[in-house]
Image (cartoon, rainbow, N blue to C red; front, side):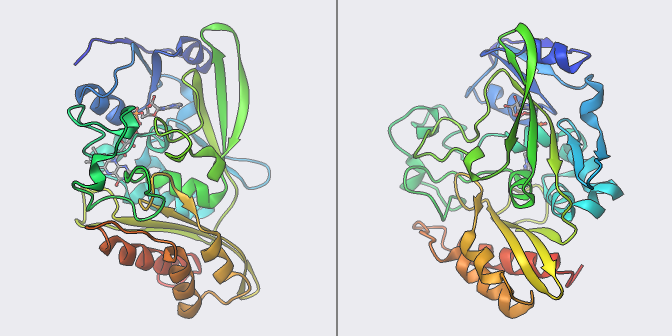
Length: 330
Ligand SMILES: Cc1cc2nc3c(=O)[nH]c(=O)nc-3n(C[C@H](O)[C@H](O)[C@H](O)COP(=O)(O)OP(=O)(O)OC[C@H]3O[C@@H](n4cnc5c(N)ncnc54)[C@H](O)[C@@H]3O)c2cc1C
């Protein structure tokens, strides 16, 4: 492992001033340290956020929106009653991630910005597009856990549960930007929408539009009480999703006025399925509409030699998530 230095600022301003092209924020450090141990990437400095006070909390805004601090743990997101009541999709996604030990320290922003888990990406012995190589060895190699959508250049799936949940919820990130330690940090906002994520066709080296000197301070989640996140795993614990769906419904009487259906673990970036949303609009969210949404979500799937089973997994996730979001089966 390459050496790195460690900083533990006590305020958000100090934290953002320490960030630079070679320094990275550290939440729980699960992914940052894994990548360093694997020899994939080691920042010059890890800037721990553990002592930045406001970033570990959730609070409710004047319009019912929930502010979720960027270093809130997955355990807190999964268990705080206020989060579960206002945005069950986020609580479900956090609860389904990883193991109790990981959830106790892994953070909202770190989960959202973790890199893909593809074995070839994580092993510098292999050429990999995500590390600047010219090919994706998983296409011909082991891709049983690979993407079934958007997999033309790279078949690593986006690994983050919260990415799908925040995308479905229409969350917005509040980001503090430093200019390489010079000047005062400034604020910007970024909607967690399809444009936030970067597909391999655009730039295989990153998955999200966020710069090295930027700090995700918090995520602002609109109230979405009719929402749910469902994933299918090969094992009950200690496993990334084989497929996942995050669904947010806006109801009008007994019918769906508007739906957002995000697909996780299906493509190199989380996808918002317009086709699934259209299948739900104007319908009562029962089994028939949920099945139609599930079919629409997988209609464009291009499974590889060994991962066609994930198409069915994704179907099941979408159907169950629609029914749960509609209050059936909780
Ligand atoms: C056994 C196991 C099972 C797992 N299963 C799942 C699963 O099912 N689903 C799932 O989603 N994940 C899963 N994970 C991954 C785990 O949830 C992530 O590694 C973890 O959430 C990353 O969070 P962290 O706070 O440790 O991030 P870190 O490692 O600290 O950071 C990750 C990235 O985010 C950046 N970052 C961190 N905080 C900020 C910030 N505030 N602003 C800007 N950038 C920031 C870092 O610089 C780094 O680039 C699993 C991990 C393990 C070990």
